[in-house]
Image 1 (cartoon, rainbow, N blue to C red):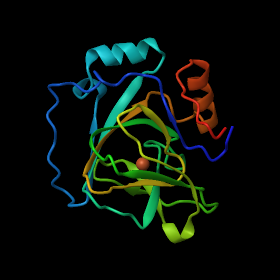
Image 2: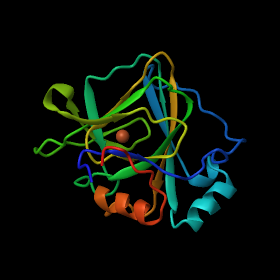
Image 3: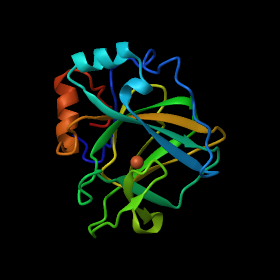
Image 4: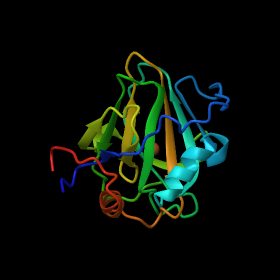
Length: 198
Ligand SMILES: [Fe+2]
């Protein structure tokens, strides 16, 4: 396995995942970016939740990310586990729901020093670094396909000409699963789409 691989597309249909009755929030807190947290049943359809449960993937909560167009970061963050600030949240299942066609998600090797924790507008903890302290290890345009993304190393998304709305589903009991383990789990379930750089 390529050790730098920080994303994999997942062979799970998301075309019926978003609840058609979901009321989209309006960004108010920050002109650049905002995120909101939801229980799965308040944003995803019952059918999709049942389908993913049947695959052994139990969603615990969902985040919705919004970013304005032409947002280019000079830092990257990793997601910290809410409940134990010494732990990183290892992965998420993301897909773009609106816009973002020319956005790019970037990943960086994790620095060896300890991180200090901050809180986002959805009150989720994270740690961040200036890009000048980091070395890129992977990049991908997360599109309208379910994508397993590594969130326990520094990462961020730059947008292009379109604003971007992205769903990020977090599985229950994920905090102790390593990135390599979750990749192996999806591969064992035949849900992982292999990359051609292995
Ligand atoms: Fe993140």
